[in-house]
Amino acid sequence: MKQTAFTDKLVIVFAYTILSLLGLSSLLPLMQVITLSMSPSEVINSYSFHFIPLKFDFKGYATVLANENLWRAYGNTLLRTALGVSLTIVLTFCAAYPLTKKDLPHRTFWTAFVVLTMFFSGGLIPLYLLIKSLGLMDSIWALVLPPAINTFMVMVVRNFIAELPESLEESAKIDGANDIVILFRIVIPLSLPIIATVGLYSGVYHWNAWFDSMIYIQDGKKHVLQFVLRKIILLGNTAEFEMTGQNQNVTDVESIKMATLVVSIIPLLLVYPFLQKYFVKGSLMGAVKG
Image (cartoon, rainbow, N blue to C red; front, top):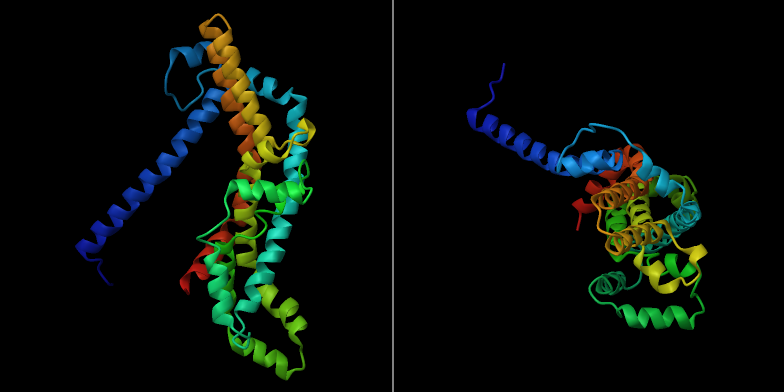
């Protein structure tokens, strides 16, 4: 039986130690947030850091969930995320697939042109003027069209498709398949890991985005979830300073803040485990070939 060398054991122990510390550094803040969100005022005021709830009080959740703007914003964010992810997947795939074809005229130039946009952009003010001149203000299209294509993801998808065996396409052509059949019956089914990766990246971006909603959307009924949650937190801070400064009010605000954070991340926590295996595979295979 092959014996593991002492140096290899040290490397394994070191790697597991680092991974454990990184895992705890991510898990402990989340536990702290969840614990404070369901703790009563006296516990929050008496203990600074604690990761296990000592008493339970869900008034923070009741305050957040009773806000009618929250549910409307949930619907707006779900619509934005679904629309944005669909657009991103379709447009990213349409941009990346032709760049993998060796018979594409001037392929090197087009690839360099696409990569160039990853380093240079017009900036916020030209983008705002463009959105306004196109008549997209106060519309969901102002939120989903500007980030519809990410250049980095285009290159990752291009690298992933380029890794697929060329013999599959050649065999399909020998059997009489045209380019459309090859795309929909061979390339896309084999590209599910990278499609899931692009979808997850895009979904997380759209779910957490709030700055563009603040700039482009004036109608309060069209604001997205993260912007509404931000207003709840800021209003809590304002009330805190305008009140008499009693500790009871301070701790209530902290409980509401933590509850809003938990409410905002629950959908991502529910979706991520189902996409995790595709996410890892797609990211690795898309990043191997430069």
